[in-house]
Amino acid sequence: MDRITIGIAAGGLASFALLYAPQPVLPQLAHQFQVTLDQASLVVGVATGALALGVIPLSLLSEVAGRRPVVLLSVVVAIVLGLVLPFVSDFHLLVGLRALQGLALAGFPAVAMAYLAEQGRVKAIGMLVAGNTFGGMVGRLAAGLTGSTAPVAILAAAAAGVLIWALPRNAEQTTTRAGISLSSAVRRPILWALYAVAFLGMGSFVALYNAIGFRLAAPPLEVSPQVASLVFVAYAIGGVNSATLGRRAGRQKVLFGMLGLTTAGALITIPAHVVPIAIGFVLLTAGWFAAHAAAGAWVNVVAPHKGPASGLYTGAYYAGASVGGTAGTAVYAAWGWTVLVSVSVCWLSLSASGVWWISRRRKTLSSAKNLSRNTGAPLAR
Image 1 (spheres, one colour):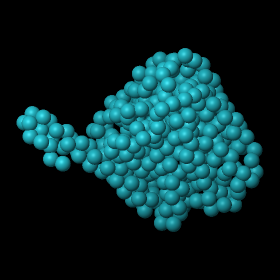
Image 2 (cartoon, rainbow, N blue to C red; image 1 turned 180 degrees about the vertical axis):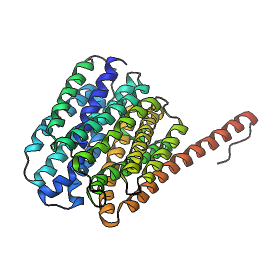
Image 3 (cartoon, one colour; image 1 turned 90 degrees about the horizontal axis):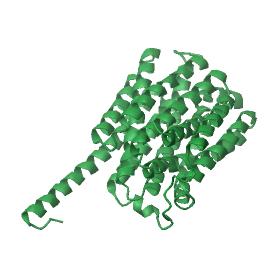
Image 4 (spheres, one colour; image 1 turned 90 degrees about the vertical axis):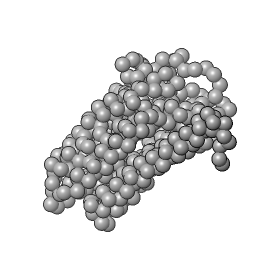
């Protein structure tokens, strides 16, 4: 593993640790600020929503200003806000600062995949997702076990030091990118299908993780917050799986297989027992992050320009986290865990169906063109 890959993985660790640190303490936040379950979930939802809004403009900014400055500024500003958040005593101010933190964080995921692709390290995107995954796990565990997000901000600052050291100043291509626009990222139907995978898959994933803390704390399980936070150890499996299978960029079998594993894991969590819940979360985490690594690498292989396509994919990913996470918590509060799992499975199935249909259509058109070329017959339109 080279220096750049290590640095980007460290940046992913810092970013995801900060982004999802409040997730395991949502029940405590609901009690502390006297708000409902779905209102408490806004602490996560507004951050991912703001991040989703920020990735496209920041990905376009990186086309002009360069990838490295956007990546570094994104992480540093988010860490400063993370150090302030534990001292906030007003819920509305907390939500507002989390939105600013999400907007600041947008620069890293908007640019990191494109940066790796331009450095000839497409296969390292799996390591990026692994860094994201371990950051999410460590951040959630640190917050859940201590009941505070302060240790997470300190951890992220250490990881940011590695990021700053690892990214060389003169490693970027110097060709001008000012003429590049989003149009190049929306011309190919397969890109739209992969954006849908990001939106629906991440929506399903965050919906389940947002609600699991409330489910574990409620009867009949009544697990303590410290023990409940151990569910995030499943992220370790997800990190290993994404780093391994993410290298097989663009392979349909990997994407479909891992979406299927995610679905199976979600279904296994339905019984109200800790063991199947733990097994199910390991499987769905491993499946989703490997699927995400494969889909993200696929985008950067087929896109004419890496920055805009990576920005749209990342925007869809975090928009799904915001919309799906907030909606999923509301579904759980209204109808319970089984209905939430059913909704999540429907979203995952829809995303897989879109990729399958467009891929099949592309193969049909390609076969027809080859037949026309070989026989000299005109291609039917």
